[in-house]
Length: 427
Length: 79
Image (cartoon, rainbow over all chains, first blue to last red; front, side):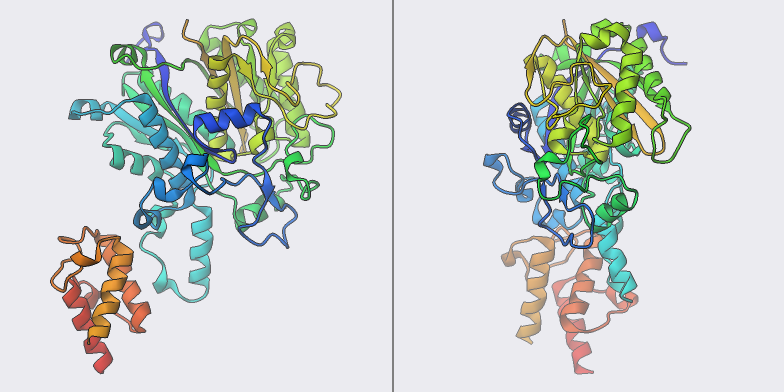
């Protein structure tokens, strides 16, 4: 059945869309990243007095023209009531990516060859929390008929399909913090296997709410030492790091079969050449100390890309700013890349935006692609005193101009799930 | 009477996001105002809250137009 490996179709990226703590749109995000801006702020939208972490990367609200998020410019107020914020962010990023790609199928055959694969790590947690309170107050009859569709993870893919008329594969990934990367990798495979010509893929998250923060606080996963200096809290590989910072947002890409993109003269950002997946088989929240799962998934992605370690110029790390995870990933990268680790640059853009959970891998894939396009690697903010084993270029504080032929982007999630993506400049 | 009608119309305008001029007494929620089955459930809940009444499921199914809603609400408040 199907195609032999050597006849796999090629997949390229032809559209990008972002909603993040740095703002809305690719331009706003890239400018903010290179300027060393932080999207981490003190939480004002709900009470944090009884929570040990009081900061997050929330999507800044305001005028669209200023790069801020105004939901009314993306979704009608009536429809906003039918969806929790993670769906609204996902739809806004998807529309940017689709418009950017210029792909607008005008016949049923093309619509049936266009699919959607957008995931989320957690889904509609704020809506679930609000509704649970209604039920607990003895008001079960007052539960909104939109509660279930407003909270379900695959409804992002559902809404994108309904709005844009995409009738191809409609799917959703749920792999915690590697969701965004898995969605892009899996969607690319659907195109490689000829199940679709175009896929809208990525991840979205809006879990910054009291119950979400309380849960990650209880798991001792979050930074709690920097509540008074939020912009310093996300500090991957720095000696003073003490956990990650939750963030909201969405990253969506349009993936397209190479010949299909060429035929319609689409702008091509990069080619998706490698994808690796693995499981740690170790612990529900802690990464395996030897980084075995991370190593295997990077190796698999390089093998699929038919690349050697020295072909990669930039690694966008998972790098969440946790004491354990950062060091394990760094050592895994050094083992996989060997001497080549000392020639590449690796940074964690979570230092700017925090950890967008299910959206992280997709937003970071976009940042990685932009590094190829612009010949600049974004910095790791707050890396003031690197831990001892940090002897490779971690791009502290400021962006670095360098030729970027290919990038590898890592994402690791609770449950011990790992994904690596490799993107390459097209010629 | 007009008070009930005005309050019903206001709820419909808010929940369905439609122009007030379209919300006439004969307007059908689904056929004329673009509602779907979930919208109609939400509308009935909003009527219950606004008027402090309970609308049983079998009665709710029969409320399909603005006029139906006004009629049912008035019949309840007369009891």
